[in-house]
Length: 234
Figure 1 (spheres, rainbow, N blue to C red):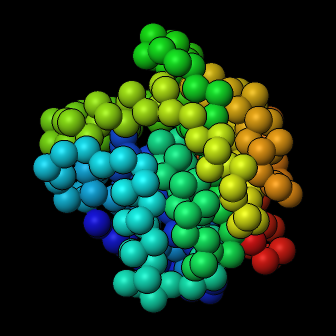
Figure 2 (tube, rainbow, N blue to C red; figure 1 turned 135 degrees about the vertical axis):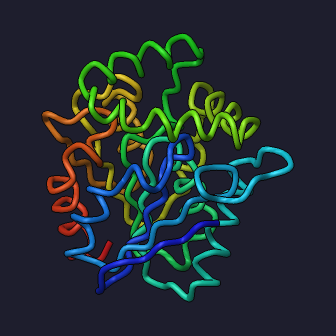
């Protein structure tokens, strides 16, 4: 793994989407560090994380996250997963809840999947029209993953199109915040509503102007939502 840390206070662990990189979340980290101790973990098979001989399952990623929190001696953590990493965070929260005080799923894949790569690509293209600056900034990170972590990256794309984690969502007993962009075409708001029905007591926050990557495009708004959630003990 590749780990960076900044800020002070209660710990918030950010898992960058495994199809881009931790550096793509600079504005998000800057906004969060004023409210919390922010640890960014780039997982193996993505970004600056180590290469894998073969792609991992989401269950393997969940175990890796749990072991990382233990190795870093982190307890009472608010775990944040965005898009693809939201799937890994959800499984980790269901299987290894003991070190978490809360789970934040941001426009996460894993419920109501499009079931086809074409539908996923079309949704992503629609989001890119809304957030052209972000799309341009992350192209190098996406290409890096395709070149360096080729098999893992292709596996992530397939998981984003097909994975159904409804069973894990129903098992979750950690306090959960669902943070979604109202204009998300990659993982539409209906997926957040489905997650809210599945996860007991889940809170839903919707950014009225946000798209799939509003966590980066609207960092102050996102940090405010996470800070309020953490203040309530989650």
